[in-house]
Amino acid sequence: MRILFLGAPGAGKGTQCKKLAEKYQLPHLSSGDLLRAAVRAGTAAGKAAKEYMDKGVLVPDHVLIDMFREKLTTPECAKGFILDGFPRNVPQAESLDELLNEIHASLSVVINLHTDDELLTERITGRRSCSNKDCGAVYHVKSFPPKNDNKCDVCGSELYQRSDDRQELVESRLLTYREQTEPLIDYYTDKHLLRTVSGEGDVNEIFGHVIDTLNGKG
Ligand code: AP5
Image 1 (cartoon, rainbow, N blue to C red):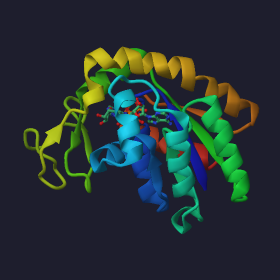
Image 2: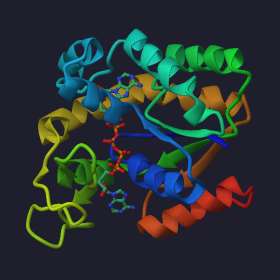
Image 3: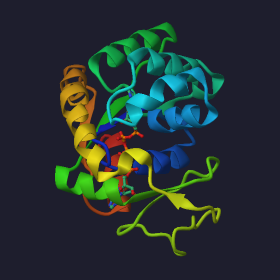
Image 4: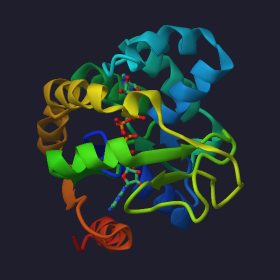
């Protein structure tokens, strides 16, 4: 299966993709996680990306396209993959189409996680992430708090708030989503690939709807 997740910042893409990756043993390719790893590692891509991420706007397309070309052509992705956060605008979607053509593959389905703006803001500003890059567990101060204050349940490392999860950047991220990413809903509807799943409610309930959708029952 080759699955693509669309959805606004904080819609719960990462949360659902991780569960799906575990269930189907597929690689989960999160553009945000890959970019943050590149920033931490100080690579050329990371250096190019940082100033854009800090403003809550899109990183230049070529950075993402190169990054995903490298990933999607690895043997690990031959049996399928889950894309989370890429593509994020129409030129990136067209580049993905070309890339998939080159490797004789196509998307199986595009899942659009739909969540109201008010909830998105609460989810983004309340998110806390594990500082251990090999763990990367994600919590929420209200809906999924860690058992011990500010420590990861899985590995015990400190939790931190992503620099782009501050209230003052949320508006810019949501605006970027509306202007640049939302047009992909029409793009994939026209290709008869889009399925919309509500991103509101209990995580496991949403996951059930995602699975039903993948099984053609959604
Ligand atoms: P990225 O990291 O991709 O951020 P995003 O799309 O804004 O998505 P998020 O990670 O904020 O949210 P999510 O939908 O994964 O939600 P999550 O599951 O964590 O991108 C960051 C930046 O990188 C961009 O701004 C841009 O600069 C750059 N970038 C990335 N891709 C790019 C591209 N293709 N082109 C150019 N630039 C790019 O959930 C959020 C919170 O809610 C968590 O705390 C979670 O625990 C909680 N939660 C989740 N589901 C539920 C639920 N059902 N109930 C209650 N709480 C829930």
